Image 1 (cartoon, rainbow, N blue to C red):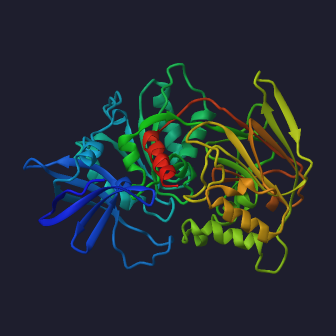
Image 2 (cartoon, rainbow, N blue to C red):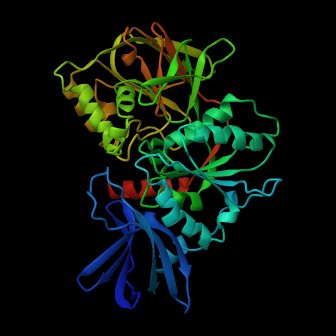
Image 3 (tube, one colour):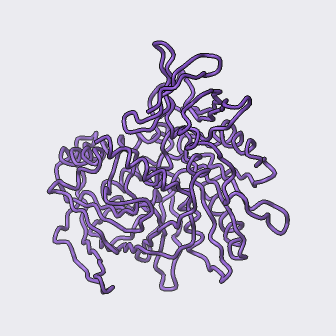
Length: 483
C-alpha cells in the first residue's frame, strides 16, 4: 500500500492504493474526509501537463433522487479527476488505454463501417440509449472513434437484432469480412445473434464476428459469469482492455409442434425446424424447466419489468407460495442424462425421480451477481452442468436458493444434484401446457403434449465475445487472499 501526498484538483490529499472488501481501490484522504474509487470503475489514466499530473477517467453512478431500489434507473456518468503524485503502480496498471485491435478493422467495400453499435431500446429498464449518450459516445470520441467510424442501430422490435444479424452480420461474415458488434442489451441480444449464425449456412470464407456486450438488460447471466458487469462501466472496461474469446453454445432440440411463446405468453411463433420437422434453438447460457423456466416466463411482462431484476424473485415467490392459497406445482417428467467417458463413448442415465422442482443446465456460473448456480463453472469453459432437485417443500426451495446466493453453497445440500453432463433429455408428463414451458437463455418455448426436449453441448464455433479474463482471474485472486 502507498500513502503519498498529492493533489485532487487543488486540494491536498493523501493516496492509498490497495484492497478494500475484496475489491482493489484508490482512496483519497483529506483531513477527516475520504473518497474511494473502485478500480473496476476506472476506464483509463491519462498523463496530463505539467509532468506528474494525471486525469483519472472513471464511470460512476450519479446521485439521484429516485428510489434506491434496483427498479429505479440508476444514471451513470463519466467523471475526470485531475490528480498529482498518485502511486506509480496505479499509473502503470491503468494508463495507456487506446482503441483495441478489434475496433481497428477495415471498412466494408461500400465504405460503410464494420464496427456496429446496437442499442436495444427495450432491454432491461430502458437505460441503453442513455448509456450510449452519456458514456460510450464520449469515450469513443476521446479515442478518435467518432460516429463516422461505426454504424449505429437502434432496435424497434423484439426481432430487430435477429433481422440485423440475418441481413448484415451473417452476409458480411460469409464474405470473409471482420466485424465487431457492440450490443447494449442483456443476454438476449447475444442469443439472437447466435441463433442466426448457427441456423443458416456459413461459407468457407466465414469470419467470426466479435461481440462486445454492454450490460443493459435484466437477464445478465453471461455478463455476471465473465466479469463484464463489475463496477459501473457496464462492461466497457472489459471491452477496451479485453480480448475476443470463443463463445461456447448448446443446442436445444424440440419435438414437433413445440413453439415460442411471445407477447407476454399471449401469442406463439414457430421454431426453426430441421428437415425431420424437429424444432431447435441455440443458447449460450441456460436451458431450464421447472421453477426457473416458470419464473422467467411469468415475469416477462411490462408490469414485472418495471422492477428490474427484482422481478425474478417476485415471480418465484408467487410460484412457491401462490396468492390464491393453492400448493406450488410439482413438475412431472422423465429425465435422462448423457455423459461421455474418456474414450468419447456416450453413456445414458435415466433419473428414478419423476417429480421435480428445479431442472437447469448451464454454461455459466452466475445467474445474478451473487446467485452462483454453478460454482464449478469458469468463464467460457464450455462445460455443460446440471443443477436439479425434486419436489420439496417451498420453504426448502427458498432455503436452497438462499444457499446459492452464498457463493454456491446449495450444491452441498443433500437435496441438490450437481453434475457435469454432455446432454439431457426431458420427456414431459404434463397435460397442462403451462407447465411444459422451457427457458432457453430467456426465450420461452412451450413443448407439445407428450413431447420432449433434448439439450446438447459443444456446438460449432461461430462467434467471439470480448472478455478481460486476466482481470477476472486477478479479482478471484484478490477475493481468495481476503478469505
